Length: 194
Figure 1 (cartoon, rainbow, N blue to C red):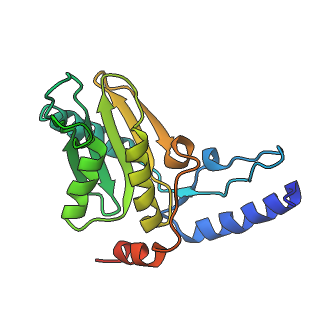
Figure 2: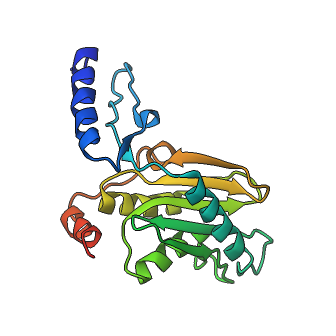
């Protein structure tokens, strides 16, 4: 049974660990406690803090690539960018197809672009749309895969063309996503590549 005392002890251990890892920070928004029966307590997840300059650069890159969206049957242009652990930013846009289901979302396009350049550990994903809309479920599940590679949360920056943005944590947008255990060791090996 989880009680307040055990939670405080767990938090103290994690905070001490965090002080030793000066690049990581505890994000209190990711801690959810619930006393409802049959609802599990979520674990504490860690994120790397985003700087305002990184956020603005991601939005700028996503806005530029948004112009290249291949939209055949709608006027819905979406741009995305991915910030890697090394600080590199890769971009992608949505590509529609005449055959339903063969199109690619901007977020997955940006992730694929980063992977094509040998990057597997991401700090953040930015998506720019007409409104402050979060990524679709398929993109969130794809991000969860790379969250497992890195072993930490991915922040999602949802921006609009006016320059407004909102930051979410992946586990908030996809709380019950599929997490593999079978391939976890192989996935983490990609995250350790240099």
